Length: 270
Image (cartoon, rainbow, N blue to C red):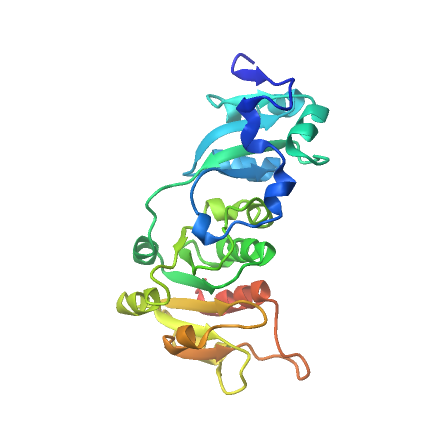
């Protein structure tokens, strides 16, 4: 195709944004680094990027995969290279067929996400990329189409390559923003009409199902902390209600991504 640019040299500066991705993965991006480009990998995630509100700087793929993706690449900067050249560029055995370099949407604030959302998921210090990605996938599936995510300092960047892949590209669709100022943004959420539910395994917390049945239609912000330490006392103190997910005796907790999905299924009306 006339808009394809053939790459034969792995050191070509035009594909520098894709170079040595495993080295970048050694240090997951946190919210303090929410600027600059990001990389999406795999056809499903790249297709989500191409259809999203985010800008696309370029696509890197094989000629065969570019031909298969067809019109979705129209008007894009597309670099094509043999499989072995792509592997030398990215620094690993690459089996997902296509990568794309995206540009962030500037100026999305916590206040804007709150104004437009019916339900919020607020994460505190959730640094694990798998958990962040899984939570975004759950929000997309169970949030009723009106949910957003706020992430405190210390959380993994949702557009970090692994988190984006685990989310199946839904981090490109679900509105999100840094939860700033933290934890003062929780007071703003309350002022905007959200009931803040802090999830905790503590036995004296109210069962989530019972709370949800008594407050149908409430505008809810689910507050989840990192596995292990959980929510800080400062964040917990700003919650409206402490809630728990009842579990079988002998099991004291759920993975945070699972807990978030269960909680959403309770508080979001079909």
